Image (tube, rainbow, N blue to C red; front, side, top):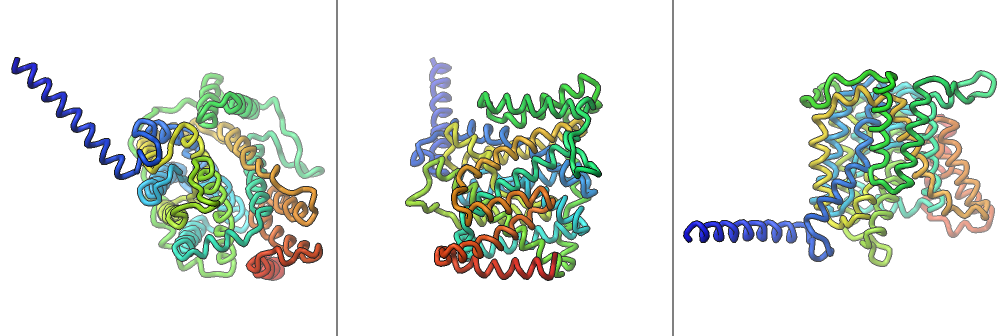
Length: 455
């Protein structure tokens, strides 16, 4: 009898403990007010993680082109994602995850380091400075004002242009597209085993996504790498799990090289990082907030906190050793399965920390394996093209120039700059100059100076 009573008491104690924990979580994240539960939030956080886990393998590939240590980049990527997502979840209280951004890492590697010849250590310092500026502009409200000054046409074209740019990089990495002396580019050798593996990766990734599989890009990487190992195209890894690699090759380089930032060339780089992240973050925040039903008369509550969280993530990521960390549109996967609060983000953050122990898998994630991720993400980023007013040339021409210049000049900065140059000019000629935000005219002269003196 006493045993039964004790068991009953233990059960009541356990139930009470669970109830207390549920109450604390509800109070911390306002679960009930947002019509969600702890279980639903955890599932949403896991879904978001799977949808964006590909960046753990793609980022070391992209930034590794600069000579940076791939293992250190892997650790910096996971830690920057965990930090930024945790801040977003606990402070801004949104179900939005962050990680080093595709497009932003391409700008860092291919434009700043490889094209402009700037050392990666200095580029990290520039990323840190841009993060500090992001934070100042966010908490003062200036960042929102500048975002509002950029016409929606150019915001849409910027996202699409970055998508074309990173898809082009993916096609190059897989050698589906190769250099050609007569035609500049040409179709590669499609019988090459590594290229065939990449083509298979694109096909299987698209099939996963068309079937609506959450984390389709991540699973595409896994299946492609597995096929590569089975067919002998890729050497199998020595292990799947290990200790966390050293962060020493990249940690703190941003701080050490801060004095190198204060040159005309680096100031242009920092400003470009500001522009690109403006568009990337604002577009993601608006899209996710609208999907989750957070917008109130078109206004995002706690917008400054969300933008500041993004800035903190960028600063932390730069110190750790990675390019700009930003909000991820893949967060929509978690929102789609019911994520509504910061608890979703906290869950995603914890999973990024656990991922630190799987660095040996980097050896099998070759450029051919990550190419499908770059190509398919490029497709997602190009979706904004449908919202551009192509019937109005004063909108269509700046948008087209912005989009096409990025892959053709191998520079995100050039695409943005050309769009900001043509838009206000054509609007004036069309007699619609008053519809242009005054700040856009200021940016016109800044860009004009950029092309005259710096390019």
